[in-house]
Amino acid sequence: MSHTLHREGRRRDLRGEFIVMSMAAKGINDAGAGPKLRRFLRIARKHGAVSVSDVKSVMHAVFTDIGAVESVLRDLRRARLGLSVTVTGLVAPIHRACCRSEVAEEPHTVAHSLGVWGNRRRLPSETVLSVMTMCGHSLVSVPLVEQAVASVRAGVCSPRAAAVKLAEPCVCGIFNVDRAARLIARLARSGKRR
Amino acid sequence: MVQISKSKCVCCHRCALFCPVAAIRSGRDGASWIDEAICVECGVCVRNGCLSGAIRRRRSPWPRSVRALFSDPVTKHRSTGVPGRGTAESKTNDVTNRIQPGQVGLNVELGRPGVGTSFHQVQQVTRRMAKAGAGFEEQNPLTHLMSDRRRGVFPRELWPERVLSVVVEASLPLEELAGVLKELRAVERKIGTVFSVSVYCRWADRRRMLALVDRRRLLPQAKVNVGLGRARRQR
Ligand code: SF4
Ligand code: SF4
Image 1 (cartoon, each protein chain N blue to C red):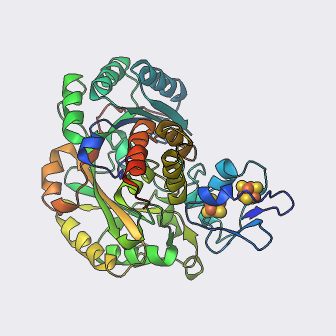
Image 2 (image 1 turned 30 degrees about the vertical axis):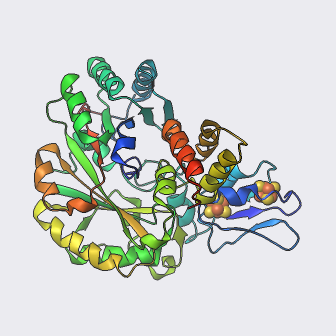
Image 3 (image 1 turned 45 degrees about the vertical axis):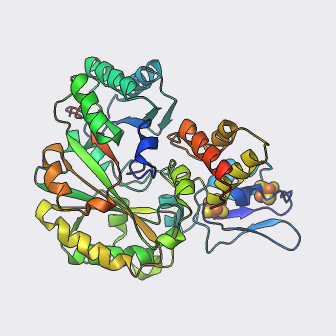
């Protein structure tokens, strides 16, 4: 599952989006992992995660500020949970946060996205794609995004309320409502449909 | 199989808005119906779309059962124990050490974002990858479905089955990455769907790996396993 990695978006938009995830490895350290995963969620909430979720023992927390991520990493290091922790976002700030929190000078593994290949004509516009790909399992449909934009343009609801509705199908809870609201407002202003 | 009960449907068409692959249509009588050929059984219309309880879901028999398995992230596959389509790949590499120094993990996620894919299209990719020497990940549910892992071939009855997305996971020595990416470039010109590509390695190998990929394709973000995981002896 590389579902947090392939988020589309401009560098400046991604500056305020970090997803911290924790899980145990099956057959290696998953025995008795439940209380540790709940501890992870408590630490994430304490440092202001904008959304947290638990999908069958894979924990996700979304942050808009790398300072908060650094504090989470520091607390996780002290807690010695022994669970794997990954952070998705711009790589340089994450590396700095690892060093400052004294988790590691050198992280363990890094994954990079090479983007979307193949028949790209089948994709919607860049901004609609940025909203859709916040759900890494592609459960947020293009018509739903278009309807959210139309509702905001017609003054029926606020960008934030539209973004909260859009987040509903995302079962992992990694849909970033704050960034989605900004993108929806941008699409509504631009008058573009797709 | 996901179906709409005509007697319960109030013709609001809300479900059609939620369907990520546009499988829900409306008939002359105004009631919605699901095009079974297109539906990937992701479950979104059941969970979020219909407020009238008009959409029902039954377990599909083989080979159609693969649709929900790969499209609905809340289904857990027997072979991985992980909900969804792949293994934990880079996320737990600090305890599994699946990707060793000098190796690269390659993930090709077909159908994503939001287009969907057939197994015939998946095979177009896996055959090319196998030809270039990529070894498929044992623990990945997709690998289990292959009839010939060495050649990246799936049983013929699976070819027409459609899913929202699947993750092909492979690992290979770093020096072989360029050859596999070249095969993927060849297939991307012919395939009718989209696929998202990611590569991962040990942090110390990062520069070597990035020197082998087309920098213009790189997205700005990365997923970093910070190395807090510890293996424990289990019974
Ligand atoms: S299960 Fe998914 S693909 Fe099938 S009709 Fe419902 S939303 Fe569409
Ligand atoms: S949301 Fe439910 S009631 Fe409305 S059209 Fe779809 S199936 Fe019918």
